[in-house]
Amino acid sequence: MEQDLFGERLKKAREVSGMSRKTMANRVGVKLSTVEKWENGKMNPRANRLQLLASLLNVPLMWLLAGSQNVPEPMSSASNRQIMLQKIDDLKSRIGSIKAEL
Image (cartoon, one colour):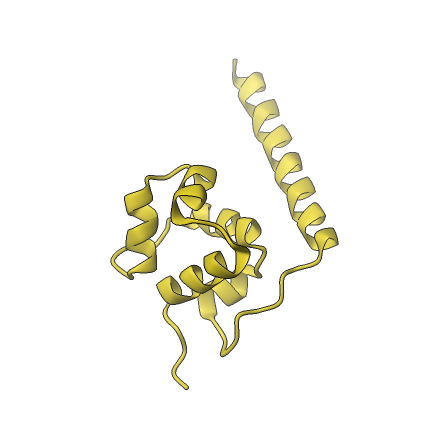
């Protein structure tokens, strides 16, 4: 079986999560047409959106990027918690840097 393309994996993961394209677009902060282009293979997301998409869809980033034959099982809530805590730490660091520049 041929590996799915990124857009096909994105669509599968979104459908498995029960999320609509519109909801995904709103949560990622892009237009609906952008999500449609991603899923149709006309455009790829920027690097800063990839981890957000993987977290939102509860799939490993490497599966989303490289694929496999099967849609993966959702990550555990502990993994999601760890990812979210890392994002919070990153944001705190960025806020601290911005404050220091002011």
